[in-house]
Image 1 (cartoon, rainbow, N blue to C red):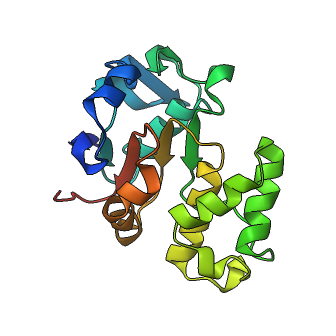
Image 2: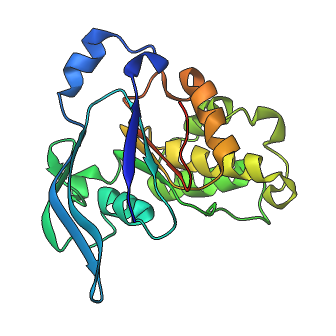
Length: 212
């Protein structure tokens, strides 16, 4: 199955050339990247470079390797051959853990806790100051829902809680996995509020082509 990468230019973040200059010319780079599971090659000799300040979408059918590539970028997927670097370091390096926010395909949050309790719990694990919780609530537009149980929220709101967890540690890069086109369209439309103070490269997956 084919896997495509599409990119939106940096001006969606309204980032200045000065900020981009500090970030270097490469955010994520793959060379001859191969990932194999059992006897099947999931990723076949991928070569690509993602520049700073861009939203990059992965487009491909189920089984094309979208999630596998994301897992490799955040360092939880073994690479069989080739190289994959993030911010100039080998993907999975310990120093990258706090610099990459990862939103999984299914929200990894607790339905029996409120929005604020979820964020407080994950902030404690990441050893992040409680002040970050209020900042994140504003970024994901959930200030008025912070005392509501996550299990009573809509699917889109639950996804925003999960995204908020990923933003707690003020990551340099944000990796988003999922098929919910409407949810990620909202990321684009609200990108100024969510990412204007972050140096982010967002990955957005879809199972069908997306016109940008």
